Image (tube, rainbow, N blue to C red):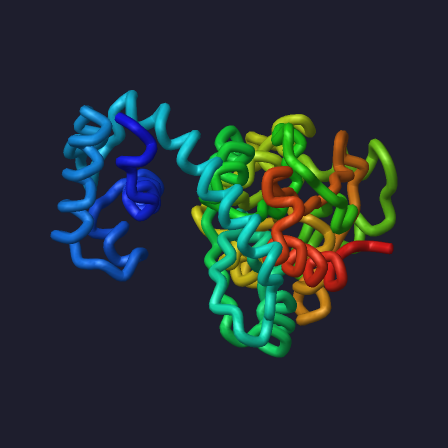
Length: 302
């Protein structure tokens, strides 16, 4: 196949099907009908001489040839998009851009309210979608444009651009009337850690760092409830004697709302840094740069 025979729109179509894993979802993103996308794929299959996608549960699965082609196509499209956007700039007042963000549920609670407030004021047409990605896949997801930014404590994520947003530490949240609060408040150091073994805990299954701290402190046997969702924790803590290990910045909000108090045991590795990550490939993209500036202005600790 010669490059002169290739329609650039077929590459855009291929890229959307590859990213969506579905012909119908790709058609929706492209604003086309499903038959039109299927016809475009047929043309590209004939040119490439490969089926490119095969049926799979819930959509389609790329062939090995398609996987190899996707990296080159995504790189070429990103380079072209960056060149075009650099020439036109980014107008937040008129942009309809969708920014895809990796965040945990704690991250959503911490960052999205203030972020959406400023976007509503400065860029009312801009949209945001929170899309959690496995940590092992984050660097590739950023490079391929599947997501635009990742927020969080992500020490295992390498080969990305990053900047520190805030420093935090893990604390224990409990209800204000907890029978052990006064006694714990007077303790420090190792005696405080030892006293935690008289408490019962609740944790969120997906929050591996808090589960790690419980295990390091020998508290895994004191875990009485494991939940799927972070936002239910304040209600549980307020209504019971269960306690929770969580980031201090988030716990502070629950304390200010009333009904909860915090103790600060000297956990091993209790301090951590939350950063903003993005791909080097999109460093100069005006959309990416403008969004980063807003995030840093809102959240970066001086």
